[in-house]
Length: 88
Figure 1 (cartoon, helix red, strand yellow):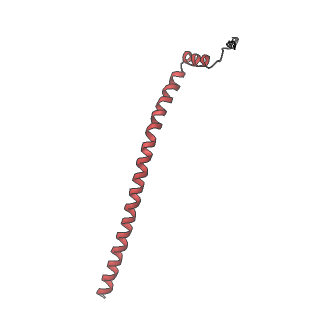
Figure 2 (cartoon, rainbow, N blue to C red):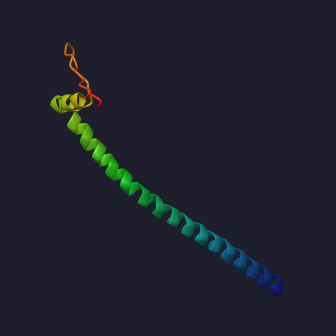
């Protein structure tokens, strides 16, 4: 009876060790993936901050008008004159 119990205990310890090893491997893979994702997030967070600052800047009507005029838009009632250089 002790031999059967000993064999069962050895098998159980072996199975548990294998299961713990598999968990360790999964944890290591997930940690690597997590690190890669954190590295991808950093530039995106910086871009988000820049876009948020630009959006806040454009909330001012004067800044928005400057940007729109640089893009070629005119206020209602204004006419846009486009001067094209003469080709030789």
